[in-house]
Image 1 (cartoon, one colour):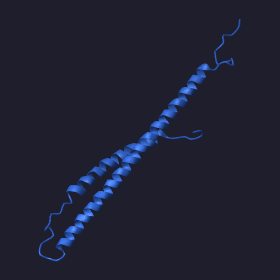
Image 2 (cartoon, rainbow, N blue to C red; image 1 turned 90 degrees about the horizontal axis):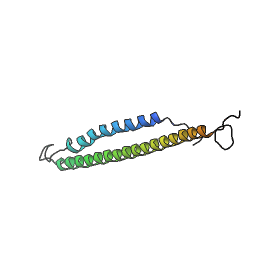
Image 3 (spheres, rainbow, N blue to C red; image 1 turned 45 degrees about the horizontal axis):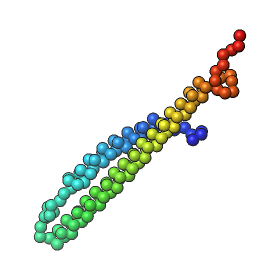
Image 4 (cartoon, helix red, strand yellow; image 1 turned 180 degrees about the vertical axis):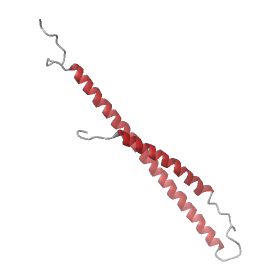
Length: 120
């Protein structure tokens, strides 16, 4: 990871945006499932295309629900992976800072890393 800089705040913002998008998708799922119900005969009765129209509506409703489900899965997967990447970079950043601090406390005038007192 040398020379690579990752802005952790941008990854955090991405996770927050995905959370908001997931919440917004919840409304779409609910509406597509329950607000688009079309009972038989709602478009009229006694004409030839009645059953075809009702069947076409059912097919379209199922397709919309499938597309929304796929989008939800994609958003959830991307959100999970983004959180994992964020965590790994955070851990790497912490480890690097720890190594620098340990190295700084061990370094000194001697070659063995121990501090030496000046001779009188």
